Length: 315
Image (cartoon, rainbow, N blue to C red):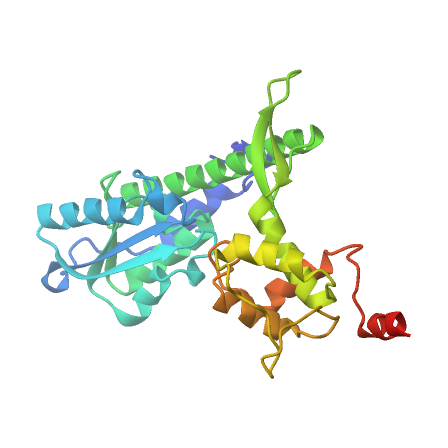
């Protein structure tokens, strides 16, 4: 294990010595009696998208653990679920189990669901051992009540860490390659939608952006309300397309219909309320002032309709 490398860097040159010291300091008591064979199930996935994966989903993990409990006559006390990466176990719900329980079993599908950090796993096993808690890993049929199984648990955690680092490097390389050929990375900005095209020279799939007509209309409506507009016909045309309300008329507090919209007629808060009340949403989410401000900050060269312009025209 000490000779394992990740991208030309050793994981830990003293890993074997650390593991040996860990095992020597760990007191395994195989004869301990557990309180009514009680069990706590723990399931974790790193991201919401993984929760839709039939192999990694929380429900799949929980079902496997329930079957294991039934087969081994374990009474289930509670089920804990996390959607969080496994690099810092102190931020996971499983860490709180040690504060609230002892003399029981924790059932997990495999060591990577506990943590992908080797030192975290060692530390957690030590704490569990002191509180008379055994860890069961269903897929690998491992229990933390023997040195042999604990070594396997640590090795599997190490394998999970290497897998994470390998995947991370592969993703970085993929992103760098796609960016080199002009692929858009990151969240699609409001007003655009993404599509893919294949680079004919190397067959790499490139992510491109194109304007989203509906969202562009919303942006224009926002700009017209904030910066002003002397063309109410255009305002109603866009509003009607977004709401299918052909009878609406924009009026002031005295119910007088707007002939023009002037800069500062509407505050950002007023515009937000107007959009939400008319169900003109931001990708199915209600607008906030911060969201609106991000749109306005990206606006360039939109003509400002000042009220003083009207006075000058009358003169």
